[in-house]
Length: 417
Image 1 (cartoon, rainbow, N blue to C red):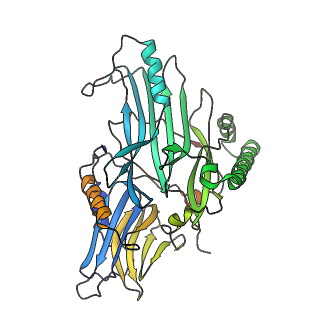
Image 2: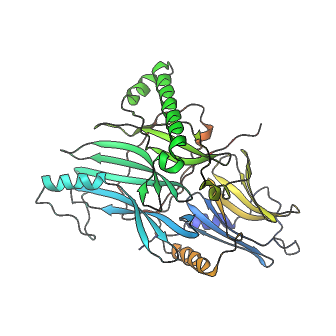
Image 3: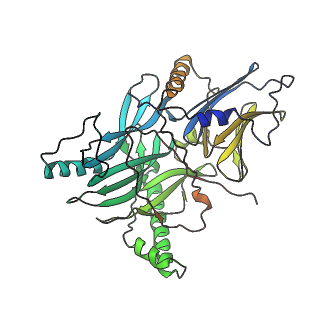
């Protein structure tokens, strides 16, 4: 079963607001909007837009959807609580739920927290695990937690970031952040080779290793303030070809490696490298249809048959004004939505069948009952970095009983010249 989560009222209210700077033709005497139907993935939410001659219907839900093989899947996270009174152990799992059948499948699981819990249990045989209705100590002597952030999904490939914090006496202390790509078809971690093939993978990995070497040399040679601290933090970094995520540069696939710290005393420091452009594999064709047909620092635009979808960004880069435009230049406001605006999934080309329409409607209805832990995450636009900085992961919070997905994006945006 999908964990219960609640639709953010702030997001619903924001969607109802008129988009600033748009020509709004929803007035009673204005022309009717073009027939259109699509999903927009933005921030931590998905929006369902349907326009007919009678008007525009908009729904919002705090969920991440994947669409591959002709079917829709909800991707979500759930906690795995194995805590004792004096020791908190909360791992996390990632599930994929088929919207038609309602069946959920485990696609990714943290294994470090369960291993730490097993060591603690062996060392404290008289301690009993907490029951669901029991509270833990306000001052636990040990804790281990995992936090998995869902970044983006491209066809059947899910990119995620996995944070680990382990502080357990007698066990390995660890604070580490890695990225992973999961194949939602096989429910297994995917390598660069799995995603792009042998030849392209060798080139991509070689480019990643070269970027890391250059960044490491730059850190060592730096004389900037804080350089000594950066050099100390970089000692434990080690290039990991499995620590990557997928994104796009101007509609083409891109790979971003994030170099993690290693060793028993890793502090959570990471070194994000610049995105690496990759050749387009066959599966990317379906992804390309969901990406903007044109974009710059001000606006993204998706072109469809007879209409277009526009996302205009404000100066804070925290929200976008979404609108629908016809071929004559008339425009209809669809409200403000959180950034990043990642994908538009077309439901009218080809037309959505009744089976999947009913499944989507159920998913959006169910989202009303979700709990109130939904969070919006700030867009980290890696394409705008002038240099690859060290990023130190802060110590994670003690987890809730359930947490929703919180996606982010990896898209390189280019300013207008």
